[in-house]
Image (cartoon, rainbow, N blue to C red; front, side, top):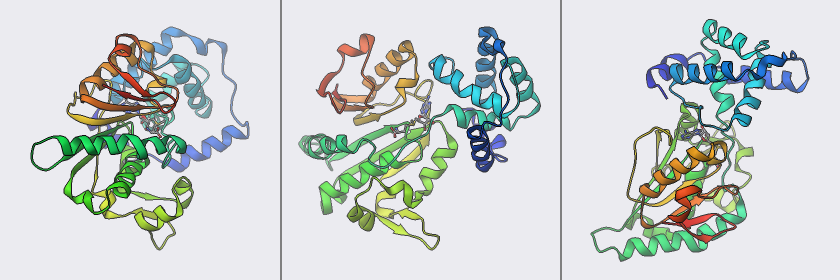
Length: 308
Ligand SMILES: C[S@@+](CC[C@H](N)C(=O)[O-])C[C@H]1O[C@@H](n2cnc3c(N)ncnc32)[C@H](O)[C@@H]1O
């Protein structure tokens, strides 16, 4: 994302407005769209404009998802066509924020796909820990990358499970968990590490007790020992820097939104990010495609865990 734009333009962003509009949509108080909304030329122009202004590149995301979400913004801003909406964006710069929030689907939760976390706890992480101890170079270290981490629930879940497995031994291993996303608003929540009670539904009560602190407003703050294990950075998996040397890369529920061509490109990037033998965890509907399919060996198919 274009950092200058982001800093300048997200100041007036009002999440309540977005929520209000969503309930307006549910009540059906919104306007009908005109048939030429489907104009491909205007759609490409719109995606190009979003890229130029915000630095966020949706041009290779699947059209169907993007168009569906765009429709919501068109209705809510009373524009009937992509062209009208383009003109609207020119006059209402703050609309870029609402548009980005709508296009970046940042739904997540602690221990999402609960049953799959059993394999991570019982097989995947113990194997990664064992390998870190086998490497004969000073203090054992483990590098983990949670891509598209949204508001942080995924990397924090991982830090909690690592502490559960390692106990006091946690301090004897150099554990670095990086959480990256392109959405600065989500990352700000992640860095805060404060969640409503409803967000903790997937967390066992004994883990809530052990790793969260309830504050005076009834919200739950992740404890410092968990927070310190995770570092959050803004990064796009499409055009961001290439990273390397990871033992475990988690990229769940993002690649389903990309075209097959872009998925292949990203899988090759993930391959390079892993050490030989490193593990990759994908979302339920995701699997390496094209040339990348041959580069990974599937360890647990149902849970989508692959090995480089
Ligand atoms: C559905 S959430 C997935 C959250 C989490 N991984 C999970 O499975 O619960 C998708 C996230 O991808 C992020 N995202 C979208 N495009 C991205 C990109 N090019 N690079 C990095 N993150 C991206 C969005 O901001 C959003 O937070």
